[in-house]
Amino acid sequence: MSPVQEPSNYLDLDQWIQLEETGSTNDYLMSSSHPAGTIVTAGKQIAGKGRSGRSWRSAGQALFFSGSFGWKQPPGPLFSLAMGLAVLEALESYSALEPDDKKGLGLKWPNDVVRERVDASYEKLGGILIEGKARGSDWQTIVGIGLNWTSAPDPEAQDPLPPGKLIRGGKPGTSVLGDASETEKGAVAMHSKLKDFLPLLVKRLNHFAVYYQNPSFLEEYKSREILQQRTVKLSGEDSTARVQGIDHQGSLILDNGTVLSDSARNLELQTQS
Image (cartoon, rainbow, N blue to C red; front, side, top):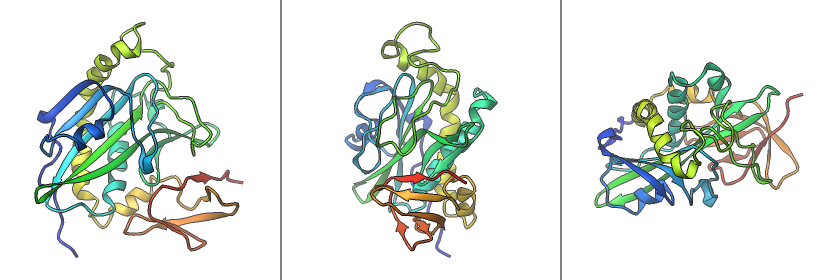
């Protein structure tokens, strides 16, 4: 068994930078000289990024978070999956969320946070973007997290799953601070919430930065991932295939022999008969 690799710098709440507005919290860290361990949140993000060059859309109050882990060498391929499980566990342990808001939470490979609806379909609540950069002889991994908190953007044709909001009772454009607009009050409202939620989130992210190397991790992840043993359709193809599992490189294994190593191609979950 390979030796366990630990970060040289974990995420540090004492290095939390709170911004009212930024283009992208990931870009902020990727282009800055802030040390590993730095955490950035923003009340508004105007140029959010998703995986494979996609944009990240949001509406109203949302969590915009990025944190930088320091390493002697880049983490292994299951690290990305582990960050999704960390976010899921943080949400489920957050006492301010109503039980109904936590019901049906899960993950869609590789690390989208989703929730099952009453009709057994799914909605996407948020996602994670992992980026990295060399800094001297060390490596920094930037973990960017976006979560629709009280409202969700309008669905678009290319969305594999329709956007959803974490707080079911939240209405588009509403704020815990009253009638003021999200643009004016979003940073204050979200940073107020984050004083309670962020310690939970950082604790789980730091835990899974090591635990993803545990032999039992992959089975734990698969138990929360919605595509397992389900029929899916790949974008650009007419045929369907059944998901058989995930290998130790974090790739999705389909029963037609296809191995998906990244999420550049959309996967459409087929209705169960």
